Length: 112
Length: 113
Image (cartoon, rainbow over all chains, first blue to last red):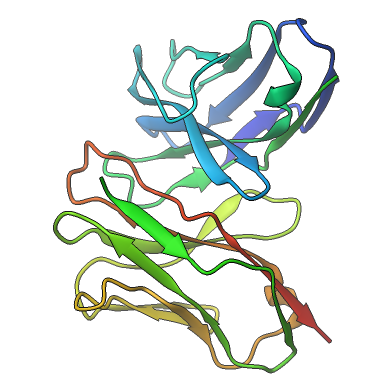
């Protein structure tokens, strides 16, 4: 089954404790992206990757890192999480051109 | 740059009511237009799309027509069901494929039985 898998689904952590949210897709998609969803602000892009070893900043990259060492994986790293990074995070992937994005089920992060 | 505006929610309707969720965009050229839907506890999924002027996208009883003259892509459904309760996102994809898809802020829809 074609899917984008994010883990964990829920995460509660404390300020400053490094964390990684994993994302994996099994569709051989070149394009992958991370979004955060906040009430009243909709979906905002954090980082994206057009292919292996190619990553670019989205609209709200501050406080986040990503890597794309393999085509299928695109982890999101918070080196020193802060409470303003409490949000619902989504990973997505697509073929080049972005005609149809496939989304993961989301990771609800709470930073205390 | 390209942008999208969709009506703010929440929108609350009774079952079998007619639904319209407005979406307008500003873009250089003619983007492809998408509606994504997010059911409770899930990620977004593509609902329908239209890739050129006057195209009508349709799926699950929902329809949207690409109106170049009004730069709009309003989502409609003739008779909503409780299972349609979700958040709906309008999303233009710019012609320049180096640009990224743009998501509206989303419209939450509640359908009452």
